[in-house]
Image (cartoon, rainbow, N blue to C red; front, side, top):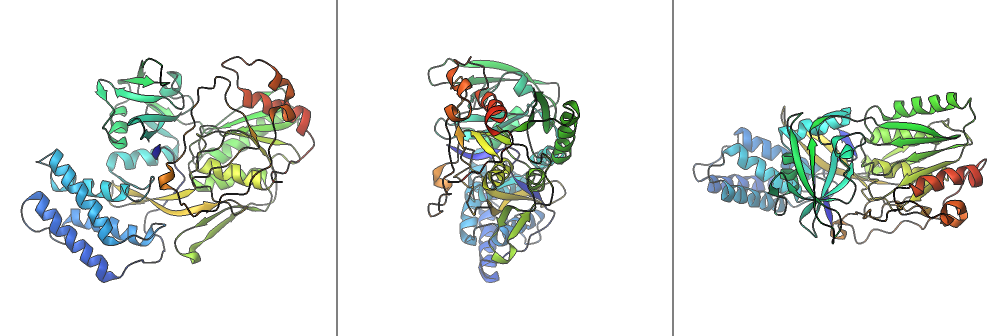
Length: 475
């Protein structure tokens, strides 16, 4: 299943190394780097690689950061093994590859071997990921992951209002061809690069939806994707708040949305539905801010790196944006990372009920740091834990009320079990209900294929079952 989520992952933007525990001696690191220089010279076929060579400095900087900052310790010789494999592969693919291309191939291979989320960011990817956090970028507006069963690219979710969303792409779609090029055998980075391009140009995607469905060819025009992190509307007296991503504008946009709907209803809101479905995450700070909008001065999330002294607990502040009003969060397997911080915190503190399906299960923090003026690395530097102490990584957050989409076509996507910690304790079970308990009218009705059953049930539950109450989440 999915090994790499190419999306807005939970990240902390940094411009230098973080404090951590060095896992190896300096002599071990130097020996490994000396071996890398020797192997690099063999692959390129001439001359020794100088220790002052800028490409070597780039590689050695990245490797030292892995050794001191990654959430797990690594043997430096293992890192060199992976880097050399990348060098050899690149040389086999392109016998004329220059030193910079070989270095980037080594970095790609080394960093990609660490975990599903760490990676080297070349100039294009580095610019792209920083644009995402700022809320505007060029492309199709689609989050994708590699589907290892089929060898194709799986859609995690289209971004609201993007060319992908307007073209009808949906979670679970498999991309078989990009223009006339078959995806099978392509790595994720190359596939994403092919889908990007100048604004105004077109790209054709050949999609496979079900095992027995014929393929569908869709043409999309690349555009500047402006991410509106919060969209909202009233469902009668119930506020509906769609949070699409956690970028720099999310918490302030949430404040404005609630204030506007409170004004429209003359302060008589019955409750709120917060929709985090297909929200792939974003900035840690914004996840904490959004959770804090609905919680008092309580624990929200704890971030733990390799060094116990560097554990960081994030707490809320006094005040609730919707005091006394019931909240239902909508989640699915496209809800990842920062979304899971919000969902886990509100569920653990009994501030909200969760409707939908189990969230993705990405409970780690990536630090984005620069290697040079135009390149960087994304490195997994910590894992996060819910207020209950539960680990989110691979387990995800389970809903209190499971509701699958009416059309039944959405396929769940979760991390490859091989990437999970087999010794991690599972989170405690949550209290669960059935649709007949919370929204019997919705459960009894024959839904249309395009009906939004989780939303319908949430609105009904707020009006008829939850008004005036705050709900606990655990037995």
